[in-house]
Length: 169
Ligand SMILES: C[S@@+](CC[C@H](N)C(=O)[O-])C[C@H]1O[C@@H](n2cnc3c(N)ncnc32)[C@H](O)[C@@H]1O
Ligand SMILES: [Zn+2]
Image (cartoon, rainbow, N blue to C red; front, side, top):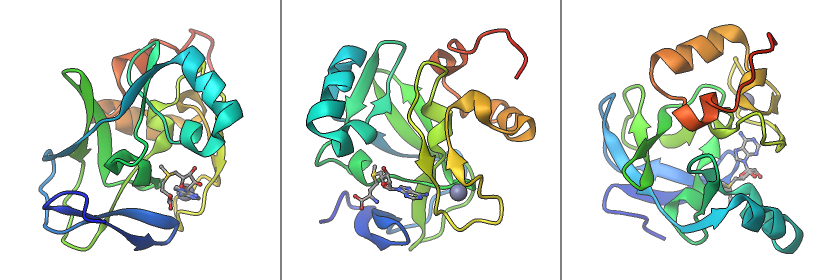
């Protein structure tokens, strides 16, 4: 499956993943993440019917998620040392390069950047990075230095920050 002129879906370390067919400079908007827009209640229902599809949903705002079934976002793997951030742009989300990406590299983002305090999903990580956190959970569970770095680069959408309570963690 060819995802776009500049991206391909290929076997990678963790199943299928998105691979760059050209280089991207930091700050480049690489592609939109589109799909069916679901309410949080619809995502809860999806967990019962199709947990794999539910796990693939991207949080779009306080109340809505994108289900990228059969679209490029369905192949976006996590890394604890990611090369893209997910940013909100108009009505969709966009993959934005956060460091130079060479042709042939897999695009990965940090799933924690889209998990608010009201998201309970977790995953055992197999990214293979030296900085791997082993368990991927909500944003507020990130080490403080990682939180600060992501916030400084604008990699945490406001609607995720808005879910944080004021209790020190
Ligand atoms: C959006 S899909 C990505 C495409 C998936 N690799 C495939 O082959 O269909 C997300 C799923 O991929 C797997 N995955 C992604 N990143 C991973 C990682 N760093 N460690 C372990 N599994 C990962 C998990 O099963 C996760 O729920
Ligand atoms: Zn990891």
